[in-house]
Image (cartoon, rainbow, N blue to C red; front, side, top):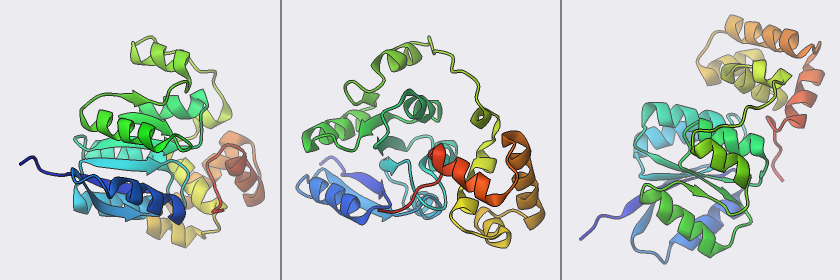
Length: 220
């Protein structure tokens, strides 16, 4: 008998998380390996549970989905990751595949489409929701990646994005240092680098930038 495929759900909205689990429940070939509602918790629990597939939201508190994606794919490249997102723009889709996502599905997809996406990714195929940045992704996956115009955000490192996100969510330097396992001095350096690169001069301006560029989200 073929073993069940273990699926881990990363989603900060409880109703959507419960909906995904309910959708998978009637399928005996799947089992829920675990769930998490923020990025840092997700990394810790995924490392522990070693699932076959992660269903990953991009907009989450404490650490965003892109950071989770990179961390897991670096540490556990065999784990398949299907991004579930509300974002349909080229920027989000390209960044997800650059970070080694195995699939990208839109949250308002039908249950049947999500089941197809899950099955495809588990079979080793790349899945993309129909109509999502089709031309750009087709070129990207064929090795003809379209060059994106350089913006201020492109100069910001992944760690600086993580610090910016946590600052925008109201964490103090010491709390950020503890969450990211770095020193307070390093947090202060990242903060100074952000202000310099983005030409912003206070925490409020950094927070506004984070919201504008989708690095910081609020639960609704």
